Length: 619
Image (tube, rainbow, N blue to C red):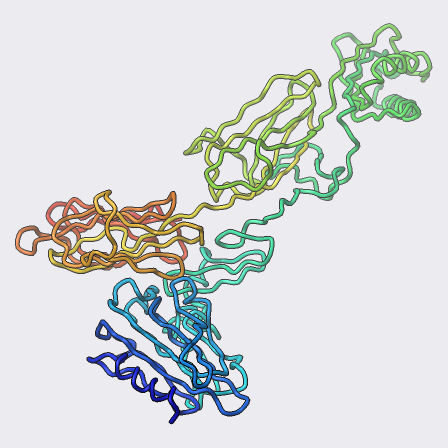
């Protein structure tokens, strides 16, 4: 035995806990390193040291963090042979405990564990890993780390990582209700609430939380939000749809979308002319084909002038044998004077034996052609933060009689029935002959995400233009339980979690006053994946506790009962929801069943009787 080893043996005797045996020199080529009584509590203060000699061949010592739940006090130091000066290669901290799965060294390795108190020094994961203490590590001397190595993190905190008897394989043993190689599939992943979109993969992290692992360029709790704004259409010529107005509830159900000309420079011309039929046609009008002749000649004539005839209507006026013709033309705005001239020439040139045109009667009404120029938003882009205000503006030209309507995902936006601040407005005609219809939403919510369509009708035609709005949801703190009633002198815990990993830290208040989380009566611990757990011992009075995470906060009122004085509503299970005991006059709050969002409430009325739960807040 060399000098270094003698000193090591001496230090072990000094470093090992006097009350519980731990530490030692590990001679085997593989084995287990664990805290006393794992996974249960151990006595503190505790000081342990394990020593692994460097392999004599080309192999290395590999430490696998199979079940590691302490967040501090565990240090790994490597030593050169016969040297008392070591180099710390890893120290477990709250920040790295969930990232490192194994260590490898070719040198002598000393593992030190020192802890003075259990509280606030362990990982806490709902619900199966809320009461684990210490660690259970495995090691072996081999050429490289096993590719099947796992850990509590790799098992999604929904199962335990175990090594085979020969330490050749590592697998996740899932808790009841969870499955998959990493135990990541559980009950939440089978619900609409945790449906992952755009190629995202649902994975449980503990029993009460699921995350969507999103592909690049997508974000949001369900990967529903693209980080790259996508236009509703790519071909600008097909961004505006047009067809004849119909009775279908969905706007612009036009079928295949054809490319429209740039109608912003076009106008709608209503031309009225008069004609007189011969006595032969007046008496026997059904045998005259003057209508076809007139329409055919007029269409050919206008076509030669690059003017489109959209409609050809006939209305008989009161005067006998006189007929007024209404012709709707589509032409460029600059052709207004030319169209009048063309029509006068047509009156002169048209000839048909049964029809005489009134050359002195010509009425011309000019209006811009129906055309939606754009739909814009008052934000830098179409990806919005939840809670922000946004205003959509639909800029269109047409007659003063055109009608604007807004649709979201094909459904009419009826602001008169909205339960929050949503409004519409029509601005007066501007100097460019454009009307602007406005849709405003004061606070964007997740449900506001979708396709917004500006729908305009004018003289029997309809046009639509659509934009896509993405809403990035803000973090919402979740607390468990949301309301609580306990007996005097009780111990309990409150869990607080955020769905997003934001650069904030958790803090707690008691009756709105910051509390010392290491005071003994109340202490906080990290709650994975993203949260904090406050444990309260020996509570005496009704207290309002608050969890705070950056700008977000949630509060929980803890009612304290005296067993001898006040009757209470007993624990109960109703429609799948478990209700804790409650004080009369208190409204208890629970999360909605899996698959729904929101809260369900239930009143404990006077006389200590439960009312029927209210599920109206569940969506």
